Length: 356
Image 1 (cartoon, rainbow, N blue to C red):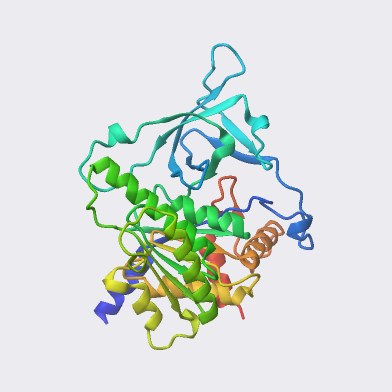
Image 2: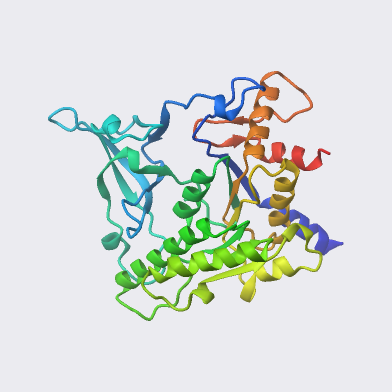
């Protein structure tokens, strides 16, 4: 009884921080408005101290995550620094619209090892705002909180996955399909490892990261394996790809013998990042069950980050916002702030798990 109470208290002490990234719209105009009919918002606003990812210019370049330290207006001869103002990135992300603004970024140093962080994690100057993408988990330590990021579209899901992976991350991908997102994560891990070898001047460093990927079709898994092989063949060799990426035909929701948990915690190591994309516009109930499976399966060592691609889940969130605005006492009063934070996010999600 006492042990049960301790486990319950531990579960309650772990906080899930809910966020949403929807580049199309932050809020539908009415409950009957479809996402395809909603006009794009003017853009994404970034401020000083925001955590961001600098998109790489090519597939061979390593994207950098960091914190904005200043925003500079280059329209006058004095290059006025707008330290307290925001910069807006148009939805079209055309460079001409942001030509007169530059951003300085202090990179995050997530590399392990004994080296001079100040020397190798220097600020990036004169970055175009159109190259920026938000980072949501930089402040999380993975011990007391888990950041859950929801997004409705595939492009954003893959960008979120690539931009949030760190050099030592074990990534669990549920719904890998033919391996497009898996390949992006693999490339990110390999490039981070190569950067670490350069910084520490050693070619014998252990590869710290890895990917465990699930899907429910042998045919799909075979295609993903070929896709990963092609991707890895274009990178500098770092160990065996079979040791870095492991793909399994596994349906976690139908698993009654604990095989999925055993595969996901291969070698006794639980995932740091969990990616969930279980197929198209799959019904809301299935996505909710999968998120719950992740929360329950890894409660002993919760992941730092969970990224979920689900149009149905994001639409449900927007509907809950509207119902809250209309004063429905039977719905949690959820709302999405301008930075993507979902107020009362856990209460909103709990209402989904208890509904029929």
